[in-house]
Image (cartoon, rainbow, N blue to C red; front, top):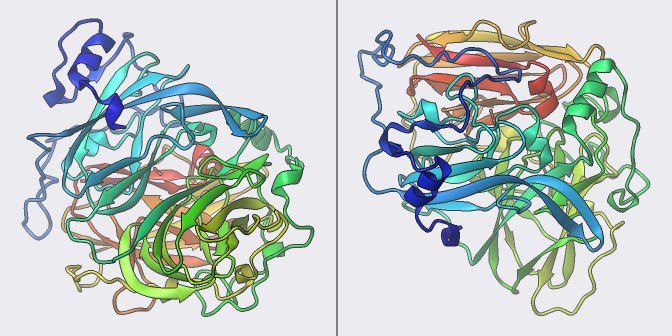
Length: 530
Ligand code: C2O
Ligand code: CU
């Protein structure tokens, strides 16, 4: 990353053919003239600041935040088409950041100002969304085309300029059509000013579903009602019989005993060729080296188009310390489920020498999934067989009810001033996914600064929906006295979920299902401060 940063100004200068660029005004630097969003997000820009006093809260407080000033960390990213050999002899065509799958990791300090220049060398327009970052005072850096910015034209460069907050494990990806399905994703780690956990080593695990071919065509097939048959890549089908059942799951809420049996849900709606951990398929697994006795932190990130995974490490327990970047009281488990847009930080203590399977199996097709290897440096053991699934997958399964926030609680204790009822609907045929019966664009969900807002979600469909809110973290009301903060939360089929957030960040923010095809089919609304 740093090697590429050379001189941002110079690069930008070149990108615009020598015209001076006013970075402080975060100008959109374009090669062409007219800017038209061509996707579903193609509504007119609605981000007109200062039209009213929406920064002044119901409590009389001024919620206006200042855009960042002062010295910035400069980062340069290039989005481009690339051929990548994901396993010996197996070359795929991907769209990437900096030619890598996943893209360049961004790692900065909490509160640091970052200026990230994105050069768009894709054949299409694009944007980047910094998933989970607050963007206080910089709603226009949130990367939602047609809402917070115009799309970045092919050949053009755009400079994102914002403060890195909060601390935690995040990701960045386009917010443009189905581009996230082509490999455009990277991790974004914000190291806290004060670390609350100690560890000897850390790794980031990006678990991604890999489609061979065009996601736009896959979407068209779904639209036409052509169910995509299983296109099974031998290597990513690891065992013949389903590895997952709901036995041994504790508690209610997210999954386990209270959730409907798997077979009642509809299967995966997209046929993936394989599943990748850090860009590598099961037959060429990423290896994570540890030494006996070490405490290892894994940052697990799911940028997948549609796959929910069940995750476990053979021979080891997991201690969950962060959900979507936010610290929780450490909770021990054997397995966890992670949906698109979610992140978990888990600790593994290396006290069982050998070479062990790290598995992330599709919750819809439990015999398929991603795999990596946890390898102790002091062992000569062979890699475990591809067909060997950790028995921990069927052990204790984390659920939201077990998550308790660790951070000092400055969340208002009052009842919500604003209650918003949301019914999540839709089905495979016709392939339409809705919020309160409507596809995006539809009227925004209006809130006022200073309010405690409650989203009361009911899932009236047969698929899971990982619902994600931009610009805020919400509390998942799970019955605990200190409900955990998250920014993405699964609403189970025929289930319901309530989340509360403090409206402390005026702007226009996307709220949507993080299943890329549900989003593309319309499952989004804007949350708008009025
Ligand atoms: Cu990662 Cu609008 O989302
Ligand atoms: Cu969905």
